[in-house]
Amino acid sequence: SLQISSSVNVTELKLDTISINKITADAEIQFADSTYSGFMNLLVSDSKIQNFSLQELHFKSKFNQQKAVNSFAFFASDSLQGEILSELKINNNPSISFQDIQLNLNNQIWKGGNDSNYIKFRQDSIEINQFELSSQQSALKANGIFAFKGTEDLHVEIQNLNLINISELHFLPYQISGKVNAFLDISGTANKPIIKSILTIDNPEIDSLRFSKFQSDINYTNEKLRFETYLDGYSSRLINAEFELPLHFSFTEKFVLPKEDNPIHAIVKIDQLD
Image: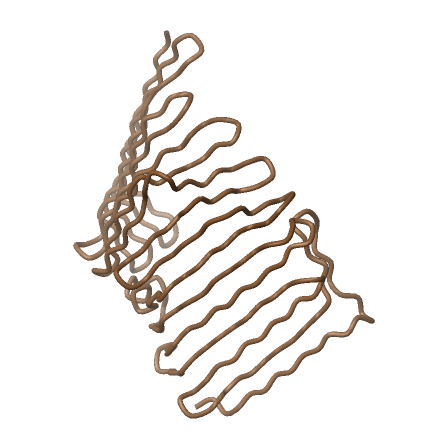
């Protein structure tokens, strides 16, 4: 048998707007006949990206030739922390499953993970089975198959996501708020996909700009892309736009832009933005 061990310690690392006080990493792998096993441990302490500070980021993994059992945890403050437990299966069609997800995002508790969810990476498709992350009022869901060849059957949904919780994480230089609902359905085949999506934001706000509703619909079928969107103020519709253009798109080849002699239909109406 053969055993290889290593450890790394890095202090006072700075790269542009990123600074890290300390990185500690340990790893070990043992080879015996045709098998191997080992572990990896990574700890990042006191890191900062622009104005966002993270006290601790910890990744642990125990692995062998068949699977890797992983733990990823982070801690920024009492109201911003989380842990994700996952398992990676290593074979011809590798997959990752999430046994437990616990996130505290500005005192919004998000939970996910169960015994049946997985994301499987096949040679010609990605299969997502019953992935769901939910809080008391919101949810993110994904299920189905995204294929590079063959039949498409993918469904993604966002329910009642409050943007104020994202804004308070200070990833953006401005304040945003509003409640997001959205879905994406992909059906048909990889060669001739049918794509339907709707994004709705109720009471969207960007800094001092406040609106009643924003909605955007995107549909692709029969080599035609149709886009409709509108933005409502509290007393009238401020923006209404729609266009339709011929477009050849598939997941098996490059998309083709319309030729100069192909008609593009567009209507845009803009009222005064106060």
